[in-house]
Image (cartoon, rainbow, N blue to C red; front, side, top):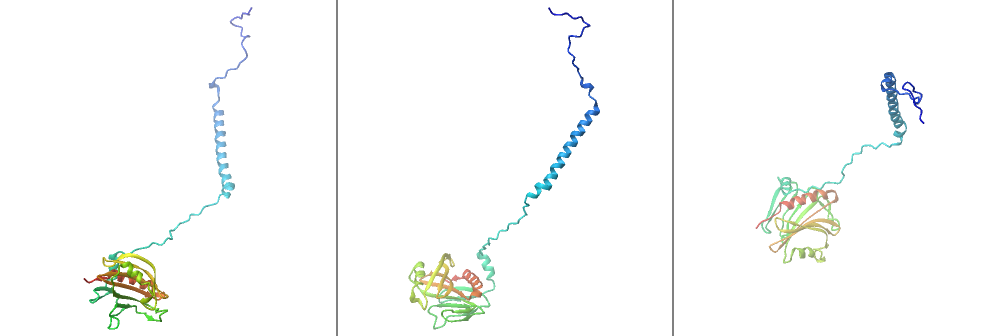
Length: 240
């Protein structure tokens, strides 16, 4: 039978020590917190030190590269801008073939004569123009020529006719063409070969007459003459 114990007998209770939280010493808590803070600081410093000495060397610095767009911008002159550039130019009017056109004041004008009056509407020559031979008709400078012929053909048929070998010493080989408006009249503009010379051209038909305007120049002045050619085309008017 179980043994009875008196109220003063504590021999049956195990030896267990109970510590109250109130018995923790404040100085030990502060020391623990201080040690933990020091460990955190040292770990952080160590990380940055390793990153700077070792990891940083393996990383390749990427320079700041400024990327520029080298694609040229093509600016197309508006009719008003072309009109401004042609301001102050001389005006040439041809009553026989019913057209007018402006040309630069430093260009010389060769008007039609009795020998070429049947087809020539006018020749506008740059100051540096000097003629060569048929294989190289222009050595320096350039000229813009207008010639007119009666035509019962359509615009496309008239352009095809230029490739025929019976139009002169050399047939025209059309290299490019785009449709434009020449004073509100349909026209073709492009490039064709005349013998060994590359020629800018505009071709239009008005009231049974074909208007063929060409620009040819030496290599040294081709860009300038072609620019003047485009400006002159923008001033062309039919007088009807």
